[in-house]
Image 1 (spheres, rainbow, N blue to C red):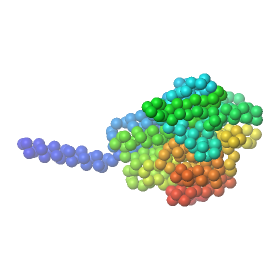
Image 2 (spheres, rainbow, N blue to C red):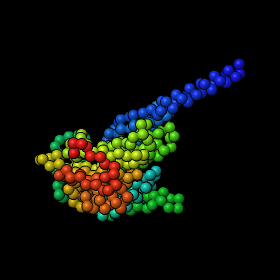
Image 3 (tube, protein in one colour):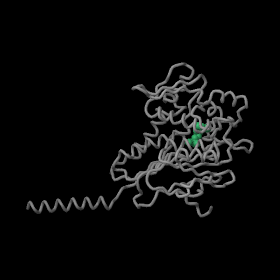
Image 4 (cartoon, protein in one colour):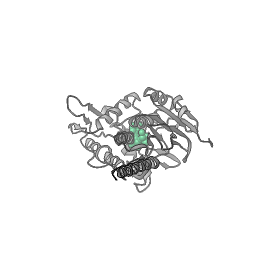
Length: 349
Ligand code: AMP
Ligand code: MG
């Protein structure tokens, strides 16, 4: 009887194990909006619990609300900006110190083309709101005087940053009228945080997480094929120029003049501004896609490279060990050798 019971138990266990092996990881999906963009989360998990994508989505929302948003009252960036000119140093918590420090370094490495202290100019143009339909009325081009006035309050010269040291948190002080805007690195920073969450969850076997123009691939697809991330055609964004075939963990970010823009008198005014002119960047490019391991770097670099243009952008991407694909306004595609190995052109191209 005992032996019979043991044999039965073993058979049941084998059935269970066999069942797990056969079922494989299940796909969980979630789509929503956060950070002013569409968030699409696809996670393969062996865990029966339903909330992996829910909790990842919650993380993006809290990163936006607690830390990074310039607009949401009470976020850390909002508080830093509110203290501008007061002489009071704001303490940065969480990953904000690292994000600001990376942004300032990229600003330096790009000769000022990338600027996390571009808040006054971003606010003046307010392209994001116009593009999202948040503003009523008719878009009016800001005057040259207003652009010059906003620019006078932008740039790293407006920021005094103290890195963490001796147990003290990082601190920041802004000049009067200055403001941080982390729109160019926020989605990448979020991807880094989501990556840490995926790595900490042993039930996750693979994932592809997309936050607007920034995408993280992680682990494996159950069928063993590479992840495929499309590169949009800037002149017809619902079509793709080709796809990137990626094995394992990568971050892909695209910055383009088609993502957020407003048109007035036949001219397109997009959301990536050139700190050298105060106007939407006009470097001959319509998009840049950057691939590297790190979300902060891929997101920051795609914006910086877009402002710099192909030649200087290429050198900057190389200096960061990243791969880049440039689409010129006339549709010409150029890419670094490492990108050639990842990119497959669409058959229509
Ligand atoms: P992305 O879509 O990642 O290229 O970032 C664009 C966003 O970054 C804009 O919506 C602004 O909030 C901000 N931004 C615009 N121009 C710059 C710039 N030159 N340097 C840093 N941030 C910028
Ligand atoms: Mg960016």
